[in-house]
Image (cartoon, rainbow, N blue to C red; front, side, top):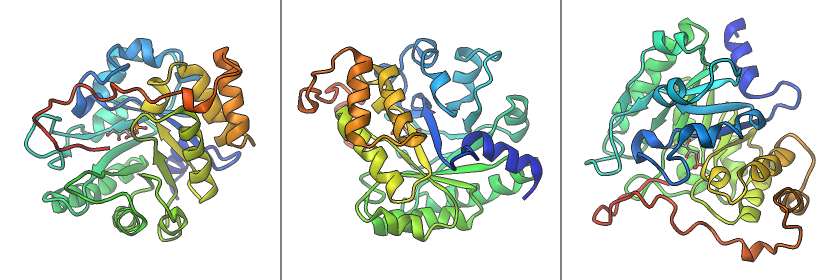
Length: 289
Ligand code: 5RP
């Protein structure tokens, strides 16, 4: 593998333990001002030092992340649709490799919509992006999008989507955790990172992290379950204690409670944020997780 490519991957997946903690803050690219991510600077600043890399768009990066702070960047370079548009799967590449290089990224990321009306377009775009990015030693992270009209979060669909992305040359694949996740990992020849998904109680999100890693994921790219938590810094530290430490779910949840100043809090008192993604209009039933 080319030195630059290897070096960039090492900024995302730590060579010390082969694990990765990415903080996802790219939701605005199709959701707009997602709850608790309305003020990007305020959300990102206290969390950036606790993650290995930041998954973000170029607009958010330029406006809301201090360039003096050396957090590795996984730049989302796909987009083109919004939550109120016709079809969320109709994405294209929206950022040039030149711009990604100017932003000194560790990787570029794009979504593939396997099984959707636009699967051909997004899969071909992935292949082209890999060819272009590899010229400069930039790794590509493929995000396997799921949604009502696309595919369900089960091992059969996710194995297919991850494998298709890897066969196009993606260096890392981001997908969702599911039952029999070992199957998804086993049939994907590149490292897999899981997305957190919708806000769930903290203990459940920690269990998701633990189970995914146990099943072979190299890490998480977590957004809402961190910054929509009542205590985002405590939550990212608890996730970190599983990803890069040896904590199990109970230990990580205890750490979360201690850091939140609520050592006696029960997990079932910790309800998910009911208003997650409340910027979705009611008349549009389609959604992505
Ligand atoms: C948005 C994304 C997010 O980066 C991904 O879903 C991770 O965030 P979350 O943990 O909130 O699901 O790709 O399209």
